[in-house]
Length: 559
Ligand code: ADP
Ligand code: MG
Image (cartoon, rainbow, N blue to C red):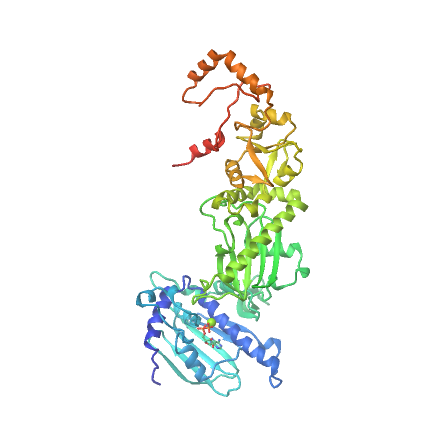
């Protein structure tokens, strides 16, 4: 039979696609299995409304068969099948949807710039196969057809035999080349792991004959190989189940299975949203920082599924940097994907989801802070620094989200307090939120500048993290209370009568002050009598915005 030619532009697109659209070859299996699943959906829904069709649950499945000798990988489904016309229309012309158009020739070289969305998933098979054979019998038809193609040079269709309704896709896997190995797509374990990764939650069983070993019956100590049909996918994703059916252990198991981390997460959030955008999500707040967390290598993101099929391992757009520690997944039917399913077509839905998720994380953290202080402090130990960076970055734009989540060690009992706790127990005559910045709590406690504040009975926040003071400068004030470094010039509590006293001291000891000034010239701006010292003879203080501690940090930064 004469070969049908692919349309000219299809030919070009096919070559281009095979080589550039997909970044990973293994996704061919995701595409073919998704097609099978779609085809079963179609027959399933038909059977629901058509009394003439009777199907059992067991009738719906997808099966993979490996034939190493012939380098054949077959994907069989019991879906709705294709007629001769379907084969021609659906597989014969790439970009069947008609929206096939390039912005211009140049952009055609980059698959990501193609306008519109259309089906090409099937063609990804040519990334691993040099021949694809499709054997199909459509529902309601007595005839079966075989479609075959070796790639860009066209395809043939001819009548064939097939007993049952459905489709069989036979891939003849490419031979290994010097640079590329294709043998792996004929290996059980490899195929299993690809299915697990992308198609674990396809709602029909994906079956495979898996090799096992068992003791031989009459030969002791010897084993024989046998094949056993297994269902590889788990089918019902945990995130589709009801929260009431699930225990903490179920969530923890999921966390481990997914290898989100090796710790025990302190909390999980299970979201089933059906408002402006419909999605399910399971998020985890880890307990411990991953080893690379505070490095450039760490990559934030959530797994992104489109209707149960994994699209992206780490979708960074779903998480703001300050919540980059959150692990988990999002599944939505509302995403419009581009041609390769590796990029999202419009990010409007994604933005909505991200916004939604962000507020859920925030309120989860807030309720932990309120109801399970110990857990929260554990969490804060690991990720508090990231929250403070979050306040500081973007010019404090996110301070409203984050300021209530911050904790600092307080001079009172040296415990962690939130800003809200601090402010709510301020005596009436206290104007400022006082803090001291330095290396350690022990050193800060001995700081002469703290003495006057402490004597007044005012609480002091000890900032021992580099980022603390910078973050606070972004917050500026909390519940209308300004922050004040105890080393700054005016603390607002120096007794007025001390003004006079200090002046007199300076006048009476003019020579001493002049001598000290000249000794320290270039190191300090001014030497003057202090109004605030009690038991200490001297202290350093600053005027203006940048404090001594901040200066130290700034000086230590690479310029
Ligand atoms: P998409 O799935 O996005 O439509 P594909 O290139 O993956 O694009 O598939 C093209 C079309 O071929 C499908 O829309 C479907 O009509 C048909 N098709 C592919 N695989 C099968 C199958 N296993 N059973 C029935 N129809 C199929
Ligand atoms: Mg498809």
